[in-house]
Amino acid sequence: MLLRVSSKAIGEEAELGGTVGMGDAAVPHGAALIAYAEAATRGSDDLAQAREALQAAVGDDGLVRAAATVGIFNGLVRVADSIGIPLDEGTRAASGGFRERLGLNEFSGASNTDLMSPAEPPKERGVPELFGD
Amino acid sequence: MPDFDYALSPVEVSPDLCAAHRAAWSRIASPGSWWTGAQRVEAARLARVARAGRNEPPWHRETPVSDPDLLPERAVNLICRVAVDVHILDRVWAEAAVAELGDAAYVELCAVAVCVIAVDAFAEALGVEAEPLPEAKPGEPDGVRPEGMVDAGAFVPMADNAAGPNVGRALSLAPADNAMFFGLVGSMYALSNFTELVWEEGPLSRPQVELVAARVSAINECFY
Image (cartoon, rainbow over all chains, first blue to last red; front, side, top):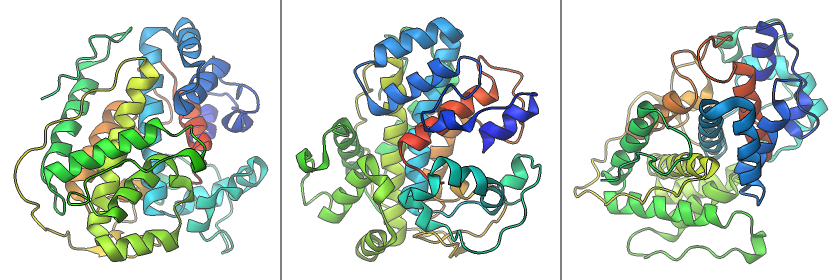
């Protein structure tokens, strides 16, 4: 969700398929970022290679930023799923189309959110509106 | 106390990030509200060991050995699930664990596990050794349960504030540990600039950061 809205905010149009392993998301250095996120999260044998490629693409500071994002999101997903929090209402309303398209509704954690009740029609949103403010 | 200076890192790690990791380790080692420092450090160790075996097929994984006098079996199972199989942790299992451990004690263990995993995942991503776990600090849990918690549809009650994302209040039954985790969030992702769609500062644009975040979330099969 934040990928889409932050991309639009700078006049770009991210392809959300990149988040589920389809394409480079139409984000600068998207392929290197995705390969790195995958290798680091899975701890796969190609992590060193993915790290080197990303460092060449985005520099030292970019690599640290990406590593920090990998680290904290491996924590954040565990907070969400261990506590069983439902999707925030604004996000639920705005994400119906791509959740269906990307197969996200098939994830086990979808059962923590009531997806059947009516949602406000999607509209252009900033970050606060996505999370209920 | 560990250094967290990332001296062997191939690239420089900012002092703010090192300080946040140091603060998390210090908090993990301290008595919480429901678990002692020794129990919390053991929880951290179990989370680390379980995560190290995450690529093993479930039928090959062995539950890490722990002293039953230190942590009950349900706590050990909770920590391992959070580390490896959190995407299939469902309401029935969670409610059974909450009934046995207590809701705030459940949340405290989750918080310890997720903090260790966030810090360890960062080190692994960067290509450096994981920091040694801290020595447990003496003292007893204070047994304080925060007031004002409500049923917001999660497995456990959460703070009654509708503003902001649910993930921001998910750990609110363990307020000091929620603060520990969001200390990490602030240094590793965003805090004051969370609501800004355009990040002018920093080596990656916000869409680049969000792409990494979303891919990590999808690999973990996180619906939220």
